[in-house]
Length: 172
Image 1 (cartoon, one colour):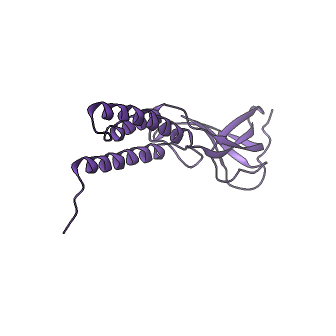
Image 2 (image 1 turned 30 degrees about the vertical axis):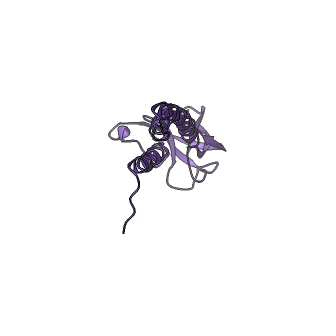
Image 3 (image 1 turned 90 degrees about the vertical axis):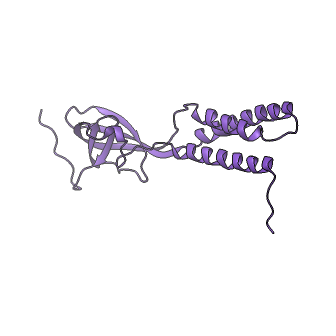
């Protein structure tokens, strides 16, 4: 003997599952570029590269852009779930509105929570001797004195160059 859920309860369970999947999908959408990670639009794009030397670094938290997608997706999902509750039509509408507001707040919080740890590097460009700051997500910092390639492409990033000796001073 199997027990079946009433149709209304089955819809509510399906709506909750769909909303949870939507919110989790949103959390996975955050793009984290870095020295070894490129977005698809960067493929095949030439980047100007210069040599530099890391003179300082500090840890930073990199927050995602607040696009509003979290609030929109959460609000729609919350409205779908909320509208499954209540007995009369007015109750469905009211619970849908409450669900939309709650879903929007939760979706917005999830979007804002996708923070990444990284480093702000101060790098001396060898050709010009100017200092530039480059922020990128890295698991561990590129150490002071490291010889790096500064890639000016779709995003500016740095990556260590081979060898541990200091680069030669540019001729003036």
